[in-house]
Image 1 (cartoon, rainbow over the protein chains, first blue to last red):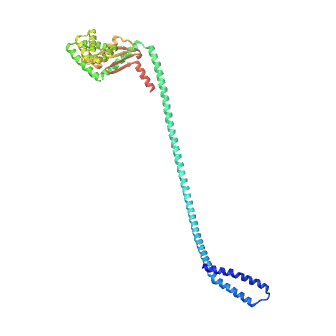
Image 2 (cartoon, each protein chain N blue to C red):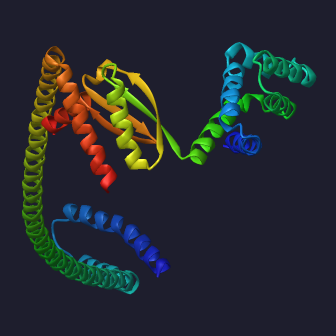
Image 3 (cartoon, rainbow over the protein chains, first blue to last red):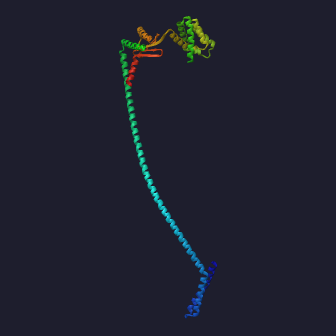
Length: 192
Length: 178
């Protein structure tokens, strides 16, 4: 095939100067000639025959191949288009799924947030109640401790005053009375 | 504890011997005198010194007994005690002897602490009541402590009978502060 194409190309190139030459001579001879016309016809026919004979199959083959290539390209393009469409639809599906997922997550997050807020609120309420209770207990204990301190201080002061008064006014008769009370106690002990 | 047990054994032996000789009280007094001397710090230190030989320790205690003019059995007892290295337990022996003797004679010792010096009548009155409680003859030891303010505190056989004004005041204070 390549050889034929090369021969056809060489002949074409070889005959083109003849055509040019004929064209140039025609200008010199203003009147027509059947011989020259015949020559041109034969020459052109030979040219066509050579072209058809040798370059035709190559050209035909080239165009056939080209058509096949174009058809294949078109098929590939169609299949690529289909794939692209499929992918686009898949992407759209995925997008819609993602949107649904996003909406679900958003809803769950809202629910979780509401739950957490509720829990934090409950915990805070419990903490406040506990703090209140502790504060009440502490203040009650402090109050009681204060009262006890006052009672102790008063008892101590009263004791000191009583001691001083007794020491100042203590007489022998008081001692006798105390001893009588003591012996009465001993009697009770002996009676047991 | 071991020392106390040993002291009781010695005291019991001496008490048995004294009972045989009918010298329960006299030997008790002599034992207390000996214990008091041996318990004096300078003599106790001397007797417990590691530099003192066994013979020297024995001689020292024998001389003390002689100086105190103790009866022969008590001198022998002192020598026996020294020979067995129990001189330091003499005070415990005297106490054990006194307690055993008191039990034997049916008597008890009581410490009567008054806020001021008591009359004999007051002491006797309290002793009589204590005898009614213990069913034993009471040998009182009198003490005076003016911090009691008034009344008396009796310590008898490990028990305390508090009839003092200081105690009543303390009770009142406790009730007030409760």
